[in-house]
Amino acid sequence: MPEGPSIVILREAAEGFAGRTIARASGNSQGVDVAALAGQPIVALRSWGKHFLIQLPTLALRIHLLMFGSYRINQRKPDSEPRLSLGFDDGEELNFYTCSVKTLPPDLDALYDWRVDVMADQWDPKLVLKHLRARPDMLVCDATLDQDLFAGAGNIFKNEVLFRIRVHPLSQVGALSAAKQRELVAGMRAYAFDFLRWKKAFVLKQHWQAHTKRICPRCDIPFHKAHLGKTQRRSFFCTRCQKQYPPAALTPVRSDSRPRSQRTPPAS
Ligand SMILES: [Zn+2]
Image (cartoon, rainbow, N blue to C red):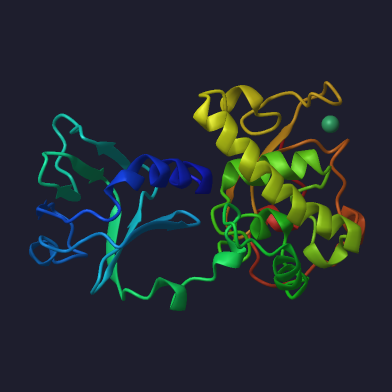
């Protein structure tokens, strides 16, 4: 799934379309009245987390690339019908495939809190820390994927940041020290810009230390791999150098409906 930095790359690649008028629109998306788009100028191109936003005078379009979405600028994907295609009078075009397209009201500032977007200029680490501390029972493997806490972060962020700060994915947010919570927030922001830089240079995967890896580069022992938390996304972690807060033996056993993965030690 494209994470926030990849959407920033899309926004930067498309920024030349801002201020121009849509000459034609087509596509098989059910989420937008494509016929109403032609003739409208693009007021701004923005992004929030994993959302790419096309702001028009009377509405905004929210494009979410989901798991397998893609886009082409001034090109078309062979044998693929775009969900949304926007054409301009010089023949240039913006095409989106296998994505979700939704119509939003035009005032995006009323809809989105840019301060929680890991890529945004308005990023506010104190506010994010406050939100995080309001969810003490949340597991960090879920918190790092929560779009209300860290908009734009995805599974790569989760695995890489928790490895960097030496925190086990089944740790509880409220059991981390205040310093460790700050380190988590700062770590998410720092990784966002490493991700962006490496993705632009086509070297992102080369820099993965934990995500999809088999051996811990710090300890030279096998990583554990498990689908953890409410999100049940793949976690890669080292039980030697990534500490669990509170320690696993002290974690209260609850008779609720948490998934098995949260109640038993992670399978290797
Ligand atoms: Zn290790």
